[in-house]
Image (tube, rainbow, N blue to C red; front, side, top):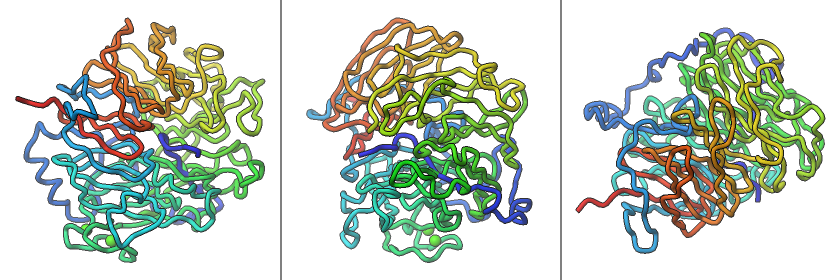
Length: 515
Ligand SMILES: [Ca+2]
Ligand SMILES: [Ca+2]
């Protein structure tokens, strides 16, 4: 059972060879950090409505909530510190997911989107193992619609059974963008077929009831670019300006040695309106160690806009967003580290997502959780003026070795404190400036999700299904610990005073009950 879930990865067949150069010049809009207009299609009604009730416009529209991917929520207030699944205390509603859920909730405009599998069997016409994105109403947890994707015939080497969709959708301008279990970048209508219209140029939907997903366009990275997603394509895409950025999940063969298509893209920039590739890069090429299950991050260092892609070779790559020019790269593993099959070695992949705040980038290494525990490394990297290979010289600080283990978690930074968990179950609170630890909390179970700072508190879930709430501060203080009845592989999210937590089978909305 592997898991790449919490982090999504996509393999983009971005190699230059595979791209149409004509398209390349034509389809490269500026991604200079300025939000651009919604796609050329009538704005959805719900979107317009939500603009009217200003103030209620809180959202967490992507993995990490923002393009920096910082797992800190700057707006949520009134979020409960305790609740109880058995008695229903502070449980606003609960909605059934499939039998395995690794996707994180994305929330905007009154809708929650979560990736899972088809075992909730919401559409009796659609049976068997599938990858699903479910769309719920924030009001009562009612299932509004779901996108359902058939499994790839190749089986576990490309599309692991029952893991569903691990990608967390990004919601933007009336559309969602996610990576299906079939290694497709999908743009879908937030209203599905509930609006009574089959929107977009894509009209070949296999499932077309009111409950099904309405696709606008679909980019098949496996068949168009020869991407070989190892075990599963998992990336949670990022939208900046007119471009969607993603990692393709291109990886090794069943034998874990051969790379079937090292020239296929690992990183892609795709026009959000047309689904056409703007540029791609196969940067790690023959250096891919296993799979590529991370996500892209956007930031601006000293005036230079850039998009960051953690590569399958353990390097972090930074590119110019508009044309894919490589700006810099950084090796996150010690030079004497060694990759060995099955997780025995000291060289690691990157499954975590980078966080970029101003000039600084924070990112840690890890491996497929199936590979077990091992030594990890967390870095703060100074990207101010960075160019070329900046390994070592741009390192602001490093935390790792014995005190920090492999991780697939992403950092949360607030008020000078940095929180990071590792797969071994330790939650570390560090000084953001120095990397020196203030405290370490033992979850006593494996952690796949990420710590998140919400409303002055730190939330973290684990494989035993416990969610701990601690005070956000230099002193460790546990406020509560609550078992969710099943593994929590995801990261809690809060919008409009409601906390959303997905365990393997259920999405919970948690809010203070008002008398
Ligand atoms: Ca529609
Ligand atoms: Ca359509």
